[in-house]
Image (cartoon, rainbow, N blue to C red):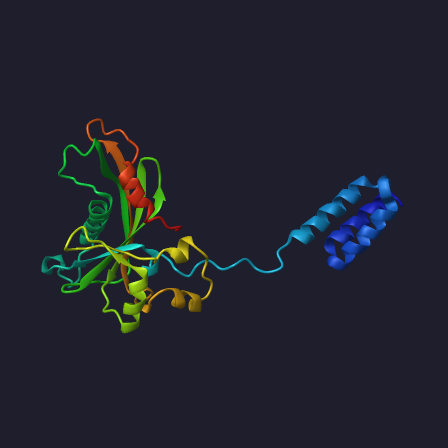
Length: 262
């Protein structure tokens, strides 16, 4: 067969549906070793057709950082009269104070950090970056539910994700579910943090339907009443030289409990 005709045949096979692929395989067998380029092209086409997925890839998890179920740890914080601005809601600057409060509450209660102990070590966590997105308002006398996760953990730095929600009264069904999902810290009698299995939908098996998500979590963990979400980066440094140092072992162990996949 003339080379120009062979080229035309290959071009037509590339444009044709899968049925033409079998025709190309037949002609390639006849041509045998006289058309090595065509044989190679046919094998590549066949391999590509075989490796194409038979079904669409699974959907991403429905749980996002705007859901309570994203965060493994939470504390309740009472809003104050002084938090309200002249528009009747909590001023944006106060949200960063909430970030500081939940992060340092976790570090003190759950990792043994004692900022007053000068003999605890030479490393301290300093803030390298923070940011916040606002969605809804809270105002006094709302009870605030602050939630915490770790989305990146490095050698000397950690990036937290914080969610700020308006506290909801739990339903009776939530009480039963929470009994199996949470453990309460006994380190402090007030402002006690709560661990939950909230992050399993993100770091564990992907939940692809709303029904699966509802089965996994109490209803109050999924209601879309988020007020704000933000990120907060701590870099651990030597308190004298201010050079980065490894995160202390006990603190790292605690932070690992909060890790989720963003």
